[in-house]
Image 1: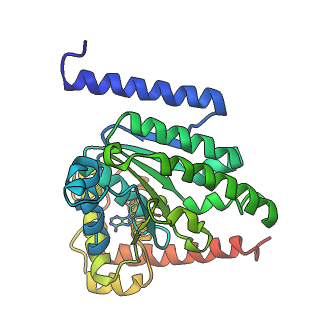
Image 2: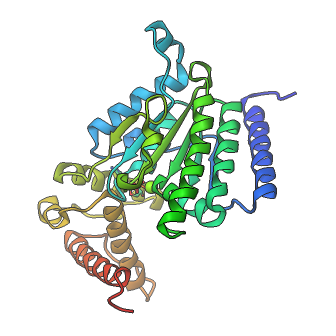
Length: 313
Ligand SMILES: Nc1ncnc2c1ncn2[C@@H]1O[C@H](COP(=O)(O)OP(=O)(O)O)[C@@H](O)[C@H]1O
Ligand SMILES: [Mg+2]
């Protein structure tokens, strides 16, 4: 008999780990493809910009905590959400923050990695995961990189279409069977490619709440810079940045996402580590250091694009 909340958490953790381990035995190693967090720890306060997306997702916490409120208004709670927008804009982070704010278990299914290994059989793993999430509610089940359901990274178009249709049908079948009034589970799909999302996934009663997660505007970028800087300083346990002149930095960040910004800050800090070979502590990151990091990042992205489009092959 568990004595307190910690024991209960621990028992639940073990139970869920067991269930996923069994799933792994049946289908193959799920490491790096499926992750589960009993107590996700990213809050909405750590998400910069995105006022509409944040407000929308905060509303969905009600479906996890108080499904009866929908019934009082004569409707059933929502089952699912599609988060769409460019890469690195905070979709995964938002899904995790939703789970945190609702005290829900966070299940992260990385569909690119799952489909690359299991192809159309990924459908069974999705069905099983949904079953597990419903068994231990409340839960947020994130279908991350949901565009991978199209299987167009694996198969030539005709086969991809056929196998993908089977996979999506398996998922929809399970979604339709969920009793939203009692489930306290939200399925959240995230994608940067709405063009390949199967329309049946976003049909009414399925992932029918569409939330856009756009690139940040300059004010959003400023907020993201501040938040990420504070987070890094908490991790480092000291001030890592000096006073930053945002009016110089932000105009050079046109079109950059929160993911880009986080990479730039990491590069600026890495330069400090690499620059102090004699063991002395260099001064904190300055505005000029950041400007250099932004330029380096742009150059690296340019090369990555060339590699992607085969110009270096
Ligand atoms: N709006 C944002 N506010 C704060 N951090 C962000 C934001 N958008 C992205 N990030 C950071 O960028 C990285 C990638 O974000 P992620 O949520 O994985 O983006 P996506 O899922 O849209 O590709 C994470 O480290 C995250 O903390
Ligand atoms: Mg993501």
